[in-house]
Length: 295
Image (cartoon, rainbow, N blue to C red; front, side, top):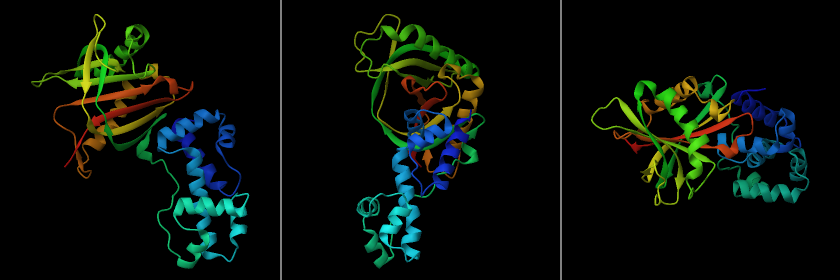
């Protein structure tokens, strides 16, 4: 079984090698022993675009060389790159580039094309891979769950334990969940230079009214955030000190990079998000968000 980095690299390589063939999500899934649905979910989670759209864009981009530098007819190029009909190629081409193949041949000018995707070594964390950051705006939301006082030195061990305890035993009593299958672990660093943080193992709720006994609430204000996406070859229950340590090291490398243009505010708050419904029996998917501001 491939680790997620190897799997995605191999998928990208097969697409390039078979760009002129009838390659699609179903064929790729069969090649690597996955279901088509899970492969498409994994690809979109990693690269923020549908697998089918990427294949189509790569096929159209690859056809540009034949269109610009060969004497082949448009219909021959369409057939060469897997389009059944000339009009289908022309219509898809214009939607992608804003001009028809014939107009492009006349002007020789093209806008943005889709280059091949790559997974860089810096993204690889052993049997895991991390992507990002993507800069996103996170709307305000309420979270309800169990709050834990966790010393910094034990955070990589105690936070995953608190998450599992909440998910297995506590979440079911929360009645107004927005996404019942999505776990949120929200961390706030304590004030006054304390050596601990507050960790809320929680789910998002529509409102914090009728709080169950023994539960706590917190609000994450609308914020510009850096979002990192993590894929690991393990169950989400198996996130441990080693896995969390590698992930936070990669995130810290971005936050502390003097060449990037964002600052992380001094009032530390961040959260991880796991959609348990997306677990396919092999790969865990996790997103991590921290507020930022431009330097």
